[in-house]
Image (cartoon, rainbow over all chains, first blue to last red; front, side):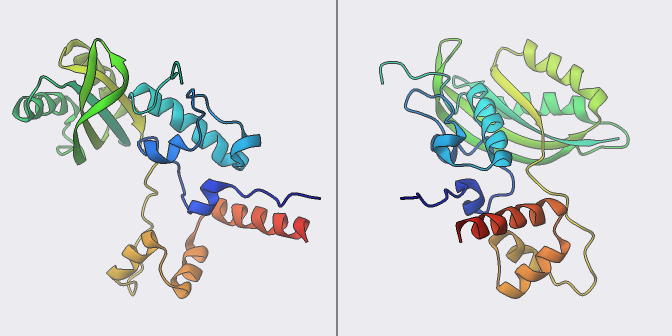
Length: 72
Length: 152
C-alpha cells in the first residue's frame, strides 16, 4: 500500500512568507519539547521548511516560542 | 538608500503605556534624516503578553511591533540606544520581507482589487494575479503539478 503524497501545509495555507510573529501557526511545526519538526514529519516543501526554521528561531528570540519545554 | 525593517520591542511590564510611548519617540528620533523625515510606517502595540521563558527575571513583557524604513547606516546608533535602555528587555530587528512591494498601479485597476489580492478574490482576479505574480509563485505551482502527475 502506498501512502498518499504529503502536501506542504504551508503551501496549502496559501501563505507567501512565513511570519515569525504568528506563534500559533509555528506551534504546529515544533515538538512538545520545542524542537523544530523535520520535513519528514511536518511534510513541508523545501522552501517553506527553510522559512519555517528561520521563523521559529526568530520567534524563540522574542520569547513567543520556547527554546525548550522541560518536563513535558 | 533606505530599507524596510521591522522591530519587535519587549519592554519591562512595569512600564505603563505613556512611558513606553516616550521611550519609542526617543528611539525613533534617531532614525530620522533629512531625506526621510518620517521613518515610521506602522506601529502596533500588542500589549502585555506572557513570555515563553523568563527574560532577566521577567515573566511578562509589553510587546510593540514597529515597521519603519531607514538608512542602514543609522541602525548601529539606534541599536546602541536600545541596549542602553533598561526598560527594553529584548529587541529584534529584521528586514521586513513580509510585505511584497506593491507593483506600480495600472491606471484602470480599481482599488477594490488590492483588497481582493490579499483575500484571494474570485477566479478572474486570480488569473490576473498569476500574470503579475513573480517567477517564484509559478515555480511552486509547477512543483505541485509535477507532484500530482507522480501520484497518477
